[in-house]
Structure formats: C-alpha cells, structure tokens
Amino acid sequence: MSELQRLKGLLPPENQSWVFIEAAAAIDPPLITLEEIGRDEVEIQVDLEQWDYLAQDHRNLLFWHEVGRIQNDTIPRDGWEMAALAIGLGGAIGELWVQDGLLLLMALGLSGFAGYRLYLKNNSEKRLQDAISADERAIDLACRFGYSVPNAYKSLGGALKDLVEKSRKKKKRTFYEDRLEALRKSAERARAEMASQEGSQKSVTSENVYG
Image (tube, rainbow, N blue to C red; front, side, top):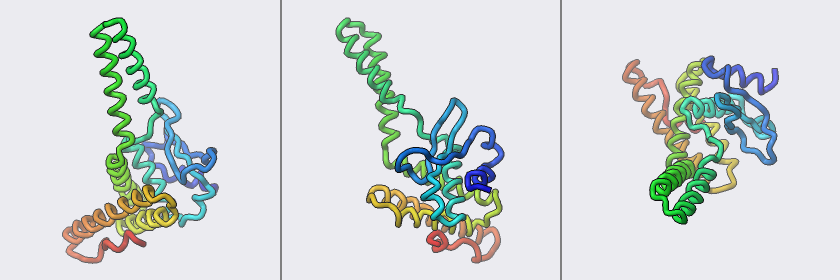
C-alpha cells in the first residue's frame, strides 16, 4: 500500500467523498497543505520526500491536523479578496469622477469588506488560533482511529517538535513553538479531566507532548 493510499484510509467517513490526497507537484512545496479544487472539493497535498522522514505516528497526527482545518472550515481560499479590493477601489475612483454617491458607497463597502478579509487572512493571531483549534480536532480524530488520549498528545507533540527543529525561519519556528505550548496546556487539562473521571493520576502528563 502506498503512503497516499494509507492516508486515504485515515479520512473519517464524513470526508471521504470530497477530500482527496495527492503528492505535491510544486517546486519546494510545504510539507503538507490544503487547496480548494472545486466548489465542494478539497485536496490535501503532501511533499512525500519530506514526509517520509517523519515517524508514522507523527505523520498521522499532522494529517489529521489538516483534516481538522477542513472540518473547522479554515481552508485557505483563492485570493478573491485582492481582486475585490482592486475592483472596489477602481469603482470608487470611477464614481468620484461621475459623482454617483450610492455607487461610491457600494464600491467603498466592497473595498472595506475585502480589506477586512485580507486582514483576517494575514493576521498571525487568528492563524495561530485556527491552528490550535485544528490540533484539538486532530487529537479527537486520533482517538476515533484507536489512539489513546496520552498517545495522541504524545504523537502530535513529537510531530510539532520535529517541525520546530526543521524550521529555518524564526517566524515559522515560533508559530510551531506556540502550538506546542498550547498543546501542553491542553494535555494538562485532559489529564485533570481524566483524573477526575477515573480517580487516577495515570492519564496524560504535560511532558507527554514533548515525546
């Protein structure tokens, strides 16, 4: 079984008919990423050359992180915002020339909305919160596919640690470090919850996320 076929088997049933997995074809692609390929279809693209260096458990959790992004509807869209911004600004300039107040307001409204969407897309804090939310989804998916809670946290923590070590750019490395810290806190909460439910301290420890 090829790696792509194996990953297809890790898709939850509700995503199997419209989520596809392909090898990345771009030059110097990211390790794993998403692309919307149709109105109701999404493609997960994997750079198999980098991917094969990771432990299988780490690969699984990084894959489920991307599935989590899909389920949370935080898929990167085509760059329509830039086109809308250009149209809106162009329309505003045109309406200033012809002095049509209503159309000017509509053009400015379009520009404002597109500008706001661009701000959200490039806002580092929102990107981090979206990633943390997808990490939580990844833990849930791992448990659905037979992982224990401690092993799910340990595997995702190990994967993030790999990404920290392989990241050359400081900004990207900090992004993974912030996710790792959020995962540690989530593991602590899970440990406390499981301990209260089972009356035992044998569940998740915060150190688990560091592998």
